[in-house]
Structure formats: structure tokens, C-alpha cells
Length: 182
Image 1: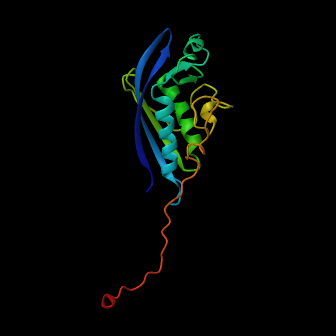
Image 2: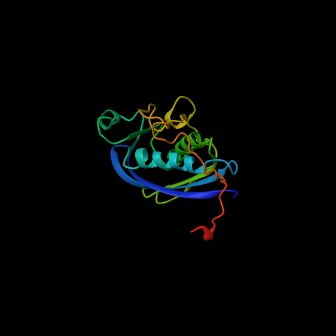
């Protein structure tokens, strides 16, 4: 297998200017296993955990937006971005995060993203960043932690997503069944 495409989706709210708007996103990840022994399933489980537990139902907001103080008091996951969370920036940041948490399992060749608010215009991200925003540094999208914030109360180990045993068949010696002994 050379590579495969894994589609996914999530819905969240987005803070743009002075409005909080519902939005839904479609993702497609181009995944290339490192080799036949690589545990691709574990990498996919990590991405699925992040989507289900952090992205879906969250609120996307620019980290310096004045509403951050208000939304930080809510029970929703608050996902902070370096600028207003437009589709291409979200795709670039998620590409970095997914690449970071799966680098031991497979390579992400591309991430395609589109949204309902963005009229389903599909953006493709194939490099860490061709965006003119500094994404390097000690940020959540550069950390191999099960979180979309700069800290995490859990670890991949506590979620049982740190290592996964692969099926290794074992041949055991069997005996011959003699029908005449009954």
C-alpha cells in the first residue's frame, strides 16, 4: 500500500469579529505508512481522539480576542489560534498537530479542509506552513500530547494510546487425533 485517504468531520463554533457562529468542517488526511510493521491504527486512534474530544463541540477563537476571558469560563473546549480561525489557518495548525502526534506511526502527506461557513472551498495543506504566521515554538499544535491546549491533564499512556501490540501469530505443536481410541 502506498497511501490512503481518511475522511473525517467535526462541528464546532467559531468566533469571528463580534460573532460566535456554528460551523462544520470536513477533513481528508493523506496517510502513508512508514513500512509494513508500523502501527497505523494507533496513529489513527490518536487523531480520532483529538477530533472527538477536543475539536468536536469546541469553540475556535483567536488567542488575543477579548472574548477569550468569557469563553474560558465555559465547559466547552476552547481552541486558541494565533489569528482569526479561518479555514486555511485551521488546516495548517491541524496539519502540524496531527503530524506531531503521528510521526512514529505514519507520514501525513496532505490535509484537505473545507467548512460550511467557507462555502466548502477546499484548502490543501502539504507543508508545515506556507502561511505567513509563526507556528513554531511551544504551542499545542507542536506538542505530542492528547490536547489542543498548551497543557494536558492526561497522557497518551493513560489513554492506552501510547503503544499497541500488533498481532504476532505463534505456531504451537498439535497432536494427532486418533479416532480409534474412543
